[in-house]
Length: 130
Image 1: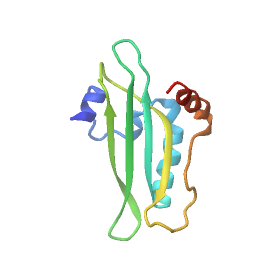
Image 2 (image 1 turned 180 degrees about the horizontal axis):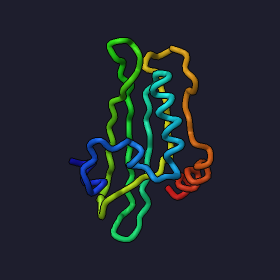
Image 3 (image 1 turned 90 degrees about the horizontal axis):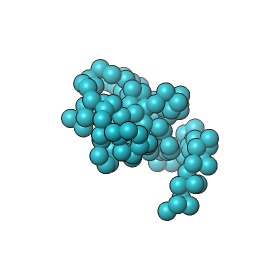
């Protein structure tokens, strides 16, 4: 029900990128690639800025890779939690930060922790205001 409230519509069958603004979808594609190729667990921090009828909204997402009967990763289990008043839907988010972790600790994987460096000045600015 939470996802339906965020989007203001039924979300079954919709791609996960429909929750993100178009400017963040390329980065989400990179994260999904690491989840399926690694396989890796991804934690994502999201933000939906305030606008008319829509208060600012912070969200988190986790993506967990799932192996098929054949042993390859073909699906992922995900969870999206938004904190705050939703306001008018649909709400779309900007990808602020992502981190990937190996499913099996100690196993080599492409990236230990990823942070979208074009957003680094935004994160540094928000830390100063705290």
